[in-house]
Length: 416
Image (cartoon, rainbow, N blue to C red; front, side, top):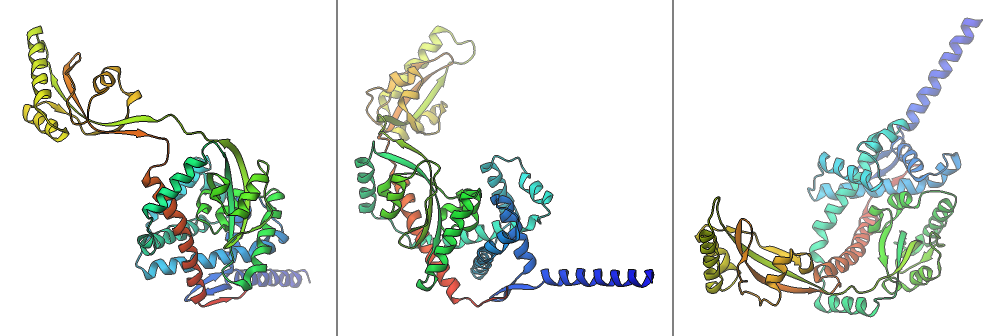
């Protein structure tokens, strides 16, 4: 009898194990010609729960599973788009991105790998996510970045706005953004935003959830959009920023394109710094040589003076210096005048551009300087910085529309 019971128990165990194995290999969703298995979904669920400090309960898994599956579907679509455009992702790029993430989190190299291994989560789960992020960033750069233009008027308007708002409060803002791509999704997206807010208030990690679920470009930095003034935000978001306390999370806010969760990390009043003069310099040096006598030194100083009298511009100074066998510096760009050595600072004070300085006698050589360009750093962002900021805003909007179009045209069959 005992033998029969043992055989039945073994058979039952094998049946359960076989059923579990078959279950994880079931298809959770079909994305065009790709499949996402239940195993993929469970592994990502476990990683999200681990990294976001969510309680590992059945209720949590059931609650976040639809969001996680949506993310996996989007990642498959992004990888498919990259393949369609013949965009490749090297393993070294994935490794470098993970290493950067460890740096952001203050973790040692391979720290994430150890945490995942200890939790029994395949490292491939993280690698797949990072690979999709890299692929999508390359797709956006290739297809969308060339279409983004920033006009002179936009730059001037941005700089004028910065000047007018100097001294006004700035806020360190974190965001989670969920897009409403279709009016029929309004309620579902709002509910997802409310659910995220409840999880964060219950102790979940805001930055980790932003990385996993936010549909804004700031997801890569854990939702951090940096220091902003309220006038730089949509009116609905600006009102929340003005009225919240540091560390406080907003309720879901309906913006132009979807729902936002906002959290404050600090406040400051940024004043315009004193203008700083910067210069681009060209320098040549005539060495005295070992054992040089006073007469030898004086001869080199006179030669330097002659050079200073005849050259007419930085290119000329560089060319003459090379012909004479002098040591010729690389063009020294954007040097802050207050940071220069006293002798150099004194030599160029009041010196017109493209005019050589008097010889500067030093221990081993005599130098001649020339100011190629002078600028006054007003503390305002440069044109290039403004262009990058405005282009990033436009690119983020275009990328969301692009992703929406890809999603709408895809064949999706969700089976769980």
